Length: 370
Image (cartoon, rainbow, N blue to C red):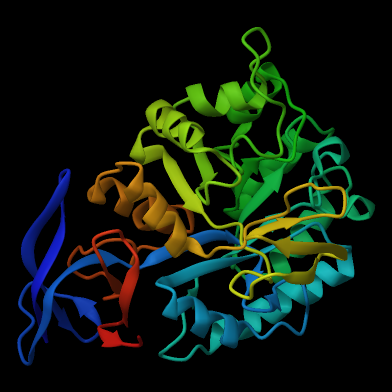
């Protein structure tokens, strides 16, 4: 089939084009039915590498309905994702991982694809725990790491670790062997400790600015390393709650679109409105579109990744750069070779958006699901 009458990202704006799809992937020579998109703007499907849940489903729970969540995420324009677990006890973590693996094996045609698992803990600092349950935090443990990765059957792709903790370097070596990318986060690391971690193999920073020591001009800390070391890719929550607009612009100026991955960090209450919910055994409340612990700490986002796209475009980010930040870079982080762009051979997952970037329609493997 051939999708016509559409505009594709090009440089700082949009240019008229078409998308050819054959057998569910983008093709150079696809033929058949012509489908007019009426002048819509098209973007590759959004990919979320850090999401704890949404629409009432908490991925920490072994009975979470991943299929329902995946259907709802797809309707929001998130065509692939990595369910993210907070710091859990060993048996709870193993049960949650197995639940995700089982869901990933058989997914419906109307579901966002599960492309990996992100473990946010338990090897993080209690001094920067944020919304993570402090009772479950522990020093890096290679035995436990192997067990968690083994339970994931190749699906564990990312793990957040505080690099200053004893045993982090040994964990980095094992992660490299097992193909898991380590991200610095929930950490009190100094600049020097963060740089040593990058030398040891860490290549990401988890939700930059959040869960780390604030930048100071004489003690730049982990944040200073994340923003200035070209080897580090930064996760960024772009809900304009976790970061102000100037902070978002600073990250983009420091790293460029090639080294930033926008995440939702959404929690189970995302998409449900105000009310009380739970994350990893910790109760939080959503009020006025912000999720907070009883002490006022922000604990994840109430918005799915489509909101981040709107915010990026509103801040003047070029459509082509937004594609890199919301689609191509997250696909690369998860090792997904068939997602994140309109290149020939890529799975035909895409969205159409209005002038502001709000999702209007969603296609999975070339078939409309919204």
